[in-house]
Image (tube, rainbow, N blue to C red; front, side):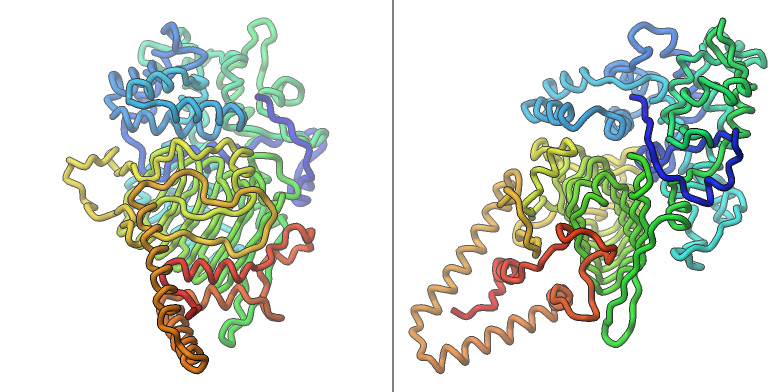
Length: 609
């Protein structure tokens, strides 16, 4: 589907463009959502992908669309990949390139009716992807390949990095660890590997016996369309974002690239030179967002110290697929927002601590990076939620996929149609069922194509540096995760007043968790009955109430719930929301009664009778 978006250019970028200039940049989403944050298997190297490209373009039923049965045959039979790993790549590509929310809901409805593996496989066999785009997707898994040089000195190549409001000495040392958000790393990747990317798209009949592209090689116009997956751009005369093939369909780029109308093709190396000459940094990437986006900050008095949280966003000017909201250094605050400014945005929550964050809108993707002691409650996330390098963080979400890597003592309560991916470096991860709701939740789920079934939150896959780690393998991280014990399970209340139709947690709980909730309710009822039967006089009731309240506040302090409770109480020095002049509909008034009731629901009631 062709993308064409009107937007307001970042002023500094626009000033750097001359009248006839064309800017081409790497699209953000293939790298952000498509490149798994783990070193890829050697079977996805250029050598094997060249063989795959030749194979699929010379076989019936593989080109221009590649179905799951044929990819499974190639992956398992030719590349010797485990079937589950082959499915992870296929499913990941489909997750962020597939069709409308309505079509997604139709598919998950079919999947939810599968009662055995054979029926599930029949549904998978109906799925297909664009062949050449999928090959490019497999190739960009090399983004997170760890080279010998980088493992020794920390950077693959020395790159000058401008310090920003999010920079720190510690971050500069570890910035290469998360290239999925690093637009400079993505540009460097494309610049250094563009020749190989183009060669993968060449018709196999033009290749030499060794599989290399000769100097007079041509790239067909049809193959060029596949590059729209990775590259887009704009001209000075028409500032709308356009796919690459449209930019190459007219001057000045068409002439620079040497297009031949008779052959309907481009000379490969002239096209390569043209693209390299016009490549630039993504004007809607993270660096541009920090430089030209709206920067939002607020102050809050916390135990005598002024702490400043920083937020930058480009949602007011970026096209769909490039919308970013960055949140950094939120400290001992409760932040809540439901807003069109969040809808469809890629969210990065970075270096936050002792915070409670509620983003209750349909989102495109979410990354929780280098946070500690935080609770993050999200609206439905269309693609993936990635928890990376976090400690003692709780994430509550409905999402297309859950990914956790290099984190410890974290808990994820999820509703997801795909198996969670646990990457290397995890320790003490707890997976639990989704356990909350807010009034517009089900409407938001429908808008991003997510349903209550299938729900695979409790079937994680461990993805190691050498591929999938099976239960029977000698697992170097035997205790990296557990499923939440039923006795530790309780429902969560979103403590804000909103309008909507959702009035309960969507979907059904497993019987063991439902029984645990019912047991807690019976204990509360028994407690209330005991108090009533004691027939206390007025003075005794008053003293008993004081005792219960004292114990309740003692529990609040011991569990850290007191901080969350205090942060929900507005005061002149605190802010619960982005102070960006948003409409009153963005505001989320606190529902303190519901919040306190939820605390009573876990067996700690503030009421004596």
